[in-house]
Image 1: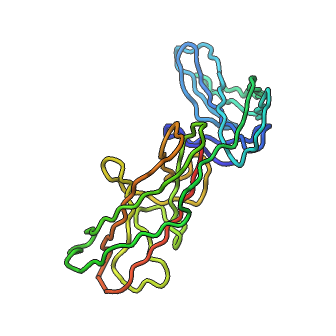
Image 2: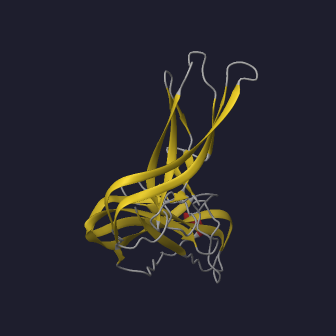
Image 3: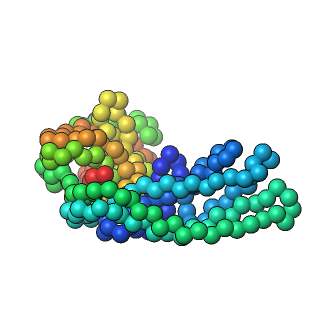
Length: 257
């Protein structure tokens, strides 16, 4: 079970009856006031002074959590047991209610494993030489060099997400790409920028295709056919400069949601 972030709230993801499909649950407290409670198996709620009674509503949302085979089903079951705890307005006026939530998403679901083809699995970008005068101070940058990531997508539209991972430091979640082994230069690293409109720095994340992965980028929605995503790579000064070779290696993981 992982987590799915939506609007700043992390929801636990539970497996459904279909392999590769999970779900999250959202709770809402209504009547007469309303409150949204983060999803989970245990939620707590304190009524306001105007609430003599209240109702608890639950909504589910399907989430892709793994590889999905082509299937056609008429229902997807969403089993989970949750506990609602509320605190009364008077001292000692506490109660706990436990209910079994065995939701079923009814409908004709055709689940297709839709993905795009990466036209170039290995992309090499040759950076121009850089001199100390080009990087005069700490955090100064130089020599932005463009490159494109190209995909071919099926006729069925798909939303494309991508995570870039620092191959030399997979735990790196910042925006500076580590130099790979064999690099001899010092005091310099690399940065990658998404060059769609105003260039924006790319933060690196874990090598995972899971929805909501840390620093996952949304590349396109309703994409079909040929797709091209422009990027830049540039030098950034990180310390005292020492001449030599500069090499960095980043991997990208696509997610189709």
